[in-house]
Image (cartoon, rainbow, N blue to C red; front, top):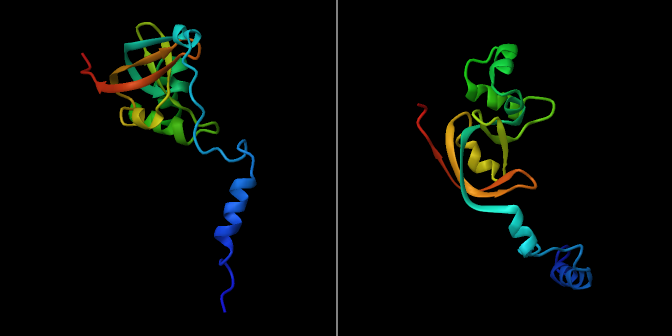
Length: 142
């Protein structure tokens, strides 16, 4: 005698057919690429700076956090700020020369370069100050 899930495919089918599409999202909605959105984004730009956490970027360096927590390297400082603070941070690109902070859309790709000087190629959205990353490369610290 079979009990249990013998009706589950039928029940699942009825649920999916009867459920409004606003509850079951099968695909992400299409991006609006009208002229208004294109005016906000600068395509194919390159940006240089250091990948660091947003808290240290706002202060301009890792020095204060490293001193307060007795951390020895910027890499450890970035890891500390991302994982162990009460409000975890995000990785950003900080350009020390211009004092500009750029948000990064792909945190996972940026995590491979934390506390390193890099060149980021991507599309810059001026409204959100976010770089939509196409490529990241380390640059020599000269």
